[in-house]
Image 1 (cartoon, rainbow, N blue to C red):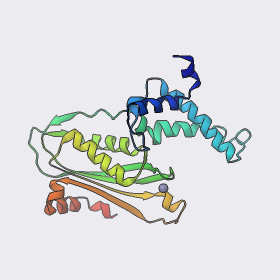
Image 2 (image 1 turned 45 degrees about the vertical axis):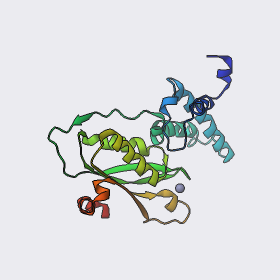
Image 3 (image 1 turned 60 degrees about the horizontal axis):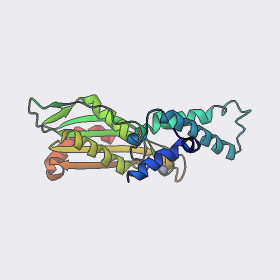
Length: 230
Ligand SMILES: [Zn+2]
């Protein structure tokens, strides 16, 4: 690598790559294809320094307070490797199988646990997701729905957009005749701060194909996911 490369923070190097490609890097975009091998640990180190500055600006004595001494390190690791990892790692490998039995009835998967954070405040969004599928030629293993949902939701998100993103990914993978995705979640930015509303949940849904066109199909799906009412 050149010398100028060394002086530049790795976040800038990655951002320049994205901009050169004309790609978008919104909070809920996946940017894995622009991150080269070995850069994530560097990014984590850079982030740790920045979180450390946040703590010092909050006037927290990280040097003497044993509770916060390692906080910058923990937060950087948590963001990049856990809660926002869906931005930085590639889509999980998902094998599709041919629909040999020619199944053409609705099947549902859920509730799948949803863990995310809002793009506005970076505080948690916790909830559940249900998926309904009327398959065409391809099917995927049931656990793959969870993996895909986790990948999409492990980013700073907007629930409505996350629901659409998950539907888009599923559609690309299995091209079903019908697809329904319903997400019900609580937003900590409504309870921890702001209006301090504790029991308020938001439900978003995307209906495509048969589920969109056919009311009876939609009603059947909603009756199959009765636990949505809990
Ligand atoms: Zn928020």
